[in-house]
Image 1 (spheres, rainbow, N blue to C red):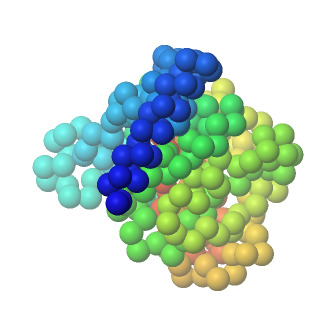
Image 2 (cartoon, rainbow, N blue to C red; image 1 turned 45 degrees about the vertical axis):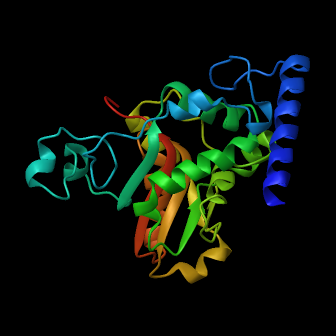
Length: 251
């Protein structure tokens, strides 16, 4: 009986896909090729499969790839930047590099309002960031300023956080509208978000807790660091970070 029902569902889905592909001719949000199975989401299987994990060894703190030789003698290796700079984020990981299909998918979620992409992206974050999520009390989405939240209609970080199977605590609020970080160099990014965040009323229970900051992209880590600083100053014991993508290489 169950097999018959499953076969019927599969047949219906195949028929609907065929009709939608002919009538609407929807294109993949990442590669712009026509979708053969539109009912399975706005991104084709080939683009999802092309998102490769960051290649170990990784910096144990920021998650950037390290030269292979570091993994031989240093179990918990850190990159030169993390060794010379005091950081508030204790550990960070990402699904993959902010490039190719992953960059297009994040762009479609964030700027084109393709909010259905938060579910498969969240699944990837949960799978590839399992070590960061393990033992955490909750996830804390990086907040948008109220004006940008109204303009966009949603916060992509919150949509992603809801897919990670941990309590979502809006512990932070953005108290100052900042210029977009997109075209700013590293030093200006840190200045841009300085004192831009504060604790919210819902954060009282996080003293001594381990929390995971969630955002779509980490470029220089400036926003994550600004958020982590506020959390640490409020008594949070450990702040980790998990993003859908991160910019790697020369930053």
